[in-house]
Image 1 (cartoon, helix red, strand yellow):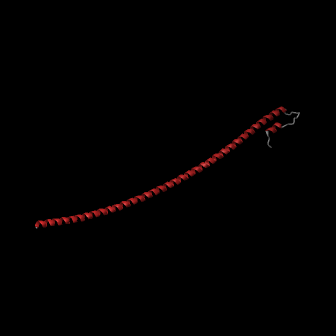
Image 2: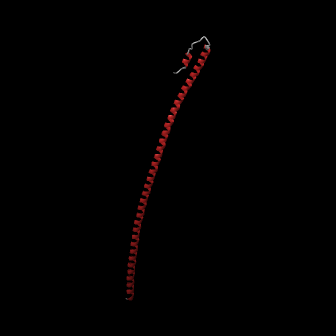
Image 3: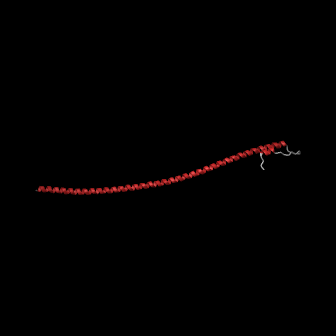
Length: 150
């Protein structure tokens, strides 16, 4: 059975003529108890409101913590993806550089071969020119020697 401060204030006792309680003392005590009870009820109500507010704050903090964890995990996933993409891009750049260097080396070797062929052709032409020139000189020398003998 719940008793309210109003119940305490309105409580009436039978007055006995023999050795009974002083009605003024009983009323004063009931007023004091009712006042204390009102204070306790008010304090209890405030504490319930405070508990409710703290419960909501706790839920908000728990939600923020969950969101923060999700954000952190998402950021870690993004970082890992960026690392993987960076590695792939680096590997691609290295592969392209290797292909380019192979093409440059092959082109240089082709040019070297062409230059060697041209040098060889120039040497052949030089030898041919020298032989032709020597032949012409010998021919002129014979003609000059033949003219001097005649």
